[in-house]
Length: 90
Image 1 (cartoon, rainbow, N blue to C red):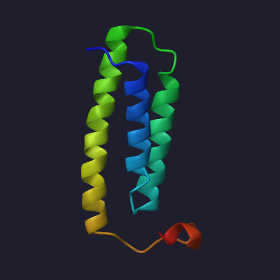
Image 2: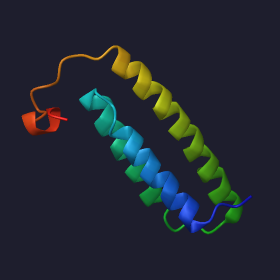
Image 3: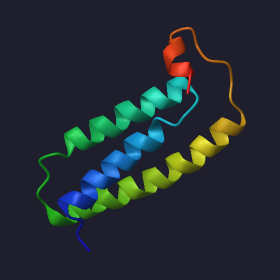
Image 4: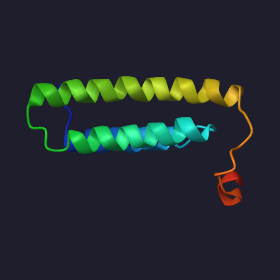
């Protein structure tokens, strides 16, 4: 099964959304940068097999991020100084 454009965009949005749920600033920012970088890097990919492999890798990353967010939130730490108070208020 080769994913379509809509499926790939949905995966991107889900990866960004889940990455933003991390309480830890460092993990959150790393995940957001990594997701954006990977999608930009593979933006012009045309080989259907390579697209399918990247999509599968992205789905696995989404599953891992969801698990890590849950675990990270169980053992949360204090917020860093660089995080603004407006972001802390949910």
